[in-house]
Length: 138
Image (cartoon, rainbow, N blue to C red; front, side, top):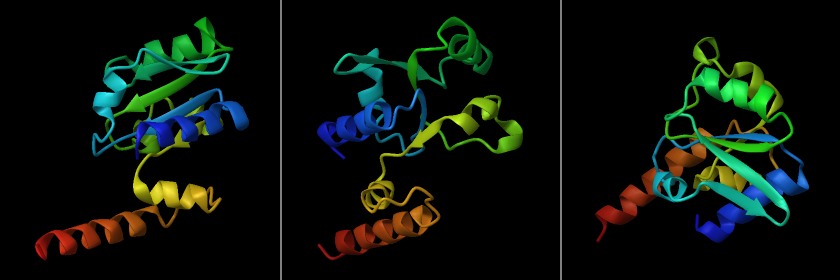
């Protein structure tokens, strides 16, 4: 996904859908360099603050989101898998917020208008196997 597609997808979440908090997990680290260059995002008059969950404690994040800036918008980025519910210190916030994924399978599902993504793993595995096969034929 290029940055133009990324901007469009995030703008749709924050502007069109009115999301205040969006969680973005990137376990393959595909966008970590992109995220390292940005202090915040701007969509028109809307500023979205970025929080790297691998660099800020869950308690500090929770205080900032709920006490310090309860009306601000945030993109919470983590270069990890989403934690299990039992280990997720931000689960209460996650339950009323949105999730974002920038992998190819998620983009296909979003383009189809499917909000529940039970096919994401299948499509991701299928894409990897096609990439592996096409790479081995060279």
